[in-house]
Image 1 (tube, rainbow, N blue to C red):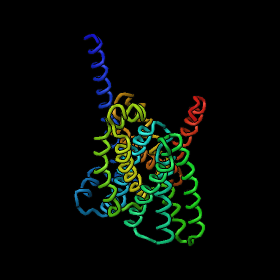
Image 2: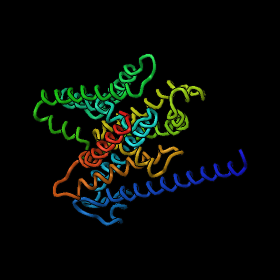
Image 3: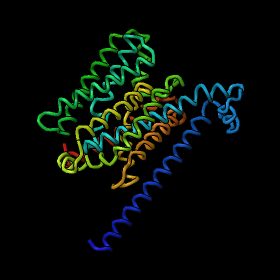
Image 4: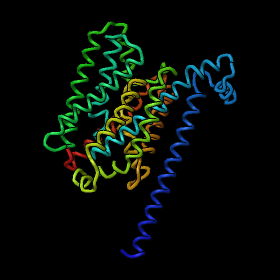
Length: 343
């Protein structure tokens, strides 16, 4: 390889790095703007100075309650849940080399949702129990999908098909639980299943914050292995990657993030599905898009919640807005994959 070729490769790598840093910075600035908007906007729009004073602990009539009790927990729930959904979705799509292989489509979210609905309508459990049940059910679901798809050799197509079938079964279980539940429990369960930031409380957020802080560095540390897994099973093995151990670490970290986020806000539709492709389109190939995907998830959730609150005559949960954004893309993706013979 000539010096000119080496210099060309290095220059290309630097351009990709600069583009990645620029996009990540812009996404972070946009997320910060949306966070500020979540704190400022509501039935009453408060001055920035009053919001800052309320956040610093000063008691202001009306402002302290609206900002600290209602808007701040709502903003933090959207921030951390969006980040968790975005990173987990990108991890699954990259690891399994298929844009359909995300927690929403292959049944992982449905497993957590079924457990949470059972806790809500049957056990009448508290938030901590719902979170624990969601994590256990999410891990059990992904373990079952992985075992059933393993066979003699690991098959991505088999995993996706089994996941879609399991999702249909779990959705039927959720419908059955709603049918046999009492009338007073149905509205809260439906509201939770839609995916909503309404009623978020500070005491419900620590598990989500802790899981995101713990699991994000793990996924970032494994990002090089994740990129190698994208080359395929044989290539990763020949390069010395322990594919099973790497997948297990990535899957457990991602599922924990998805399950806790789902337990906190409900299954916000299509955030994990859209975040990875959008981040890859913005940053480009040849770079790790983990942080950009997480920030895209944050921006999708916060922007959709603001749209749901203020863009229509009636207020809609965030999950309805993200569903309206994600459903057309899913149809487009299925049509494109079918034309390419990938389905």
